[in-house]
Image 1 (cartoon, rainbow, N blue to C red):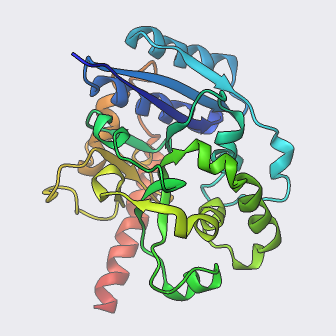
Image 2 (cartoon, rainbow, N blue to C red; image 1 turned 180 degrees about the vertical axis):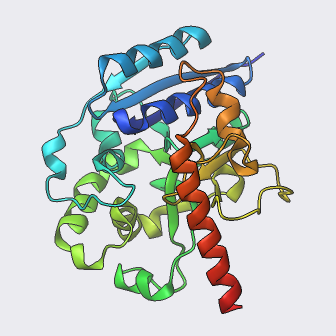
Length: 289
């Protein structure tokens, strides 16, 4: 049988180390035996303890994590707030720090869960595009503000299929950072806006099954019309803020149980606060209706 070799990369610091580990478990639990995965991680300052836990996962599934670093001074002027930290910007420099022998790679956010083998995604031809990505919802006026046409597609950057050669040839990293640093008044969504402003006309549109975005406020994943390959918990409310009994958090806790962080549960006070916020939001929605 033919073996498929796939390059995967993510970025994290200690804040998301656990969640990156959970994503890795989901990735390897659901890959086919004929799929070989090369794992790269941009290290945003991981503690020795968290590195050791990630290495435990690597040993369990018989792979090696190749730790990479990026010059963090590059992001001194970048906006960091809300649930976003500096490591979200690291993906901008992926083509500049991976080995020169690599010409294609899949970037995955740490708040994703992989439910299927990624060979079909990997086999998609993006030779005429810089990236492949899934559409995200965005106000037309914001797209125009970013320099995009009103009818262009704004994409979500949580899953990127990257054409390394084109990215390097067009010097995309520099162009994205130049936009971010010089158009701060136009940016709402951190580096994702910079990536869209630079790459909207160089993006191959992928099926939403490769980045099925879910809000923990919704119930839109109980009966999906197409089985997702990847779930992506977008927004500030994450599954690790919720009880393991929550329907939409179950995927996260399934793979958490296979990681060195198994047994983790949110503090009861956090669950109580989140529950109260959800009740308040639902009450306001009823009033508006």
